[in-house]
Image (cartoon, rainbow over the protein chains, first blue to last red):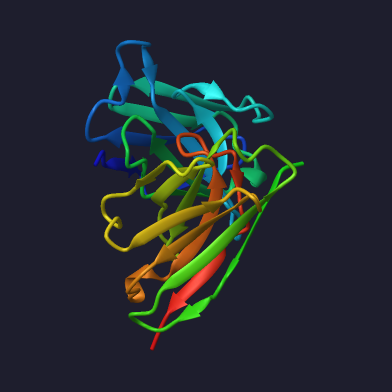
Length: 113
Length: 115
């Protein structure tokens, strides 16, 4: 299985400031035939299922605010929230969909400082 | 508006079989793969397996010996059975549309295993 490791486990950021979450995969999730990274980011708020934010490592899902961005390639990825809003308080998960079984990171809890 | 509605027993004893069903309303059933994903309380997400309308199935190897996923295309439903449950199987179980990128989820069912 591809192991996904996120850092940090929790993060407190002031409103309006930048939040950065990292995700590392145990093997590359880059498909060299199409040059796509099979990496997604989800946001989960309490009592709700996860919501897809970003896929192909950097493509924003329709309706997701542009303060959310993804970057990285191969084994190292980053989710950035450029200006934290109160509604962004949640747990964030990275997910690889390059190999079965699909696997997720352990999650990063984002709070307001 | 496509919706997933899931149901099943929420409290089981060790060694019993977990059984959940998910119904798809308002959309195409045959165009997608359908998954089960679980989340232990306060923990991360684990993909259990997937099925499509023709019965093509893939399981997570870590659970394969205990899992059965099935489909009823006449009712636009798919189901999960997990045998010989233990406390470690206590989790919120979600049905979902898709496997690689999940854009639609059921409401989740908390299944607690306790003697």
